[in-house]
Length: 166
Image (cartoon, rainbow, N blue to C red; front, side):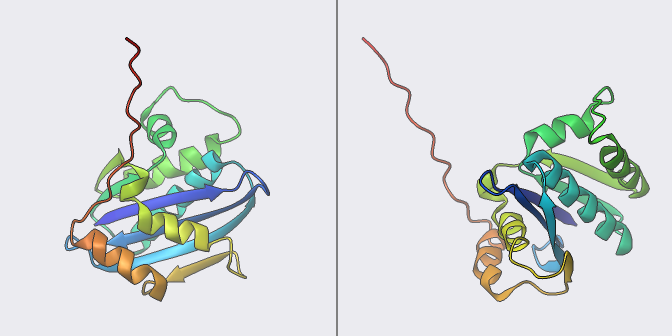
């Protein structure tokens, strides 16, 4: 299974949300969620999404999970045994504990362009009435993004060309 997570926090309002989806080896939808978090940082929103995603993996008794997220800072903190931050330590410890309960996991950073489905769900979290919704099927507006992703198509990452002074 592949778990894609994403957190979103707007700098204007501070409103944060998270989203996640689990897909099988063919790229087909298994389950997902959207969460309205409230006011927090993007780092905390990413951690909330990871925590919720790992919880869903445990609920469906996943045996092997590739965890993909577009927050390099979360990957670095999660993989560092010496990372310490009193504000996030309890949620980070919870994520690490859940990770050990899944027989095989691999956590890796991916670029935002490859995480569009989770990004879509995270942004959807700001629009929901309740705090947390588990999705047994993908929202209709997500279908085209899922199809592109399942077919292995990609979006170019815009990298500005460096200026050379002669």
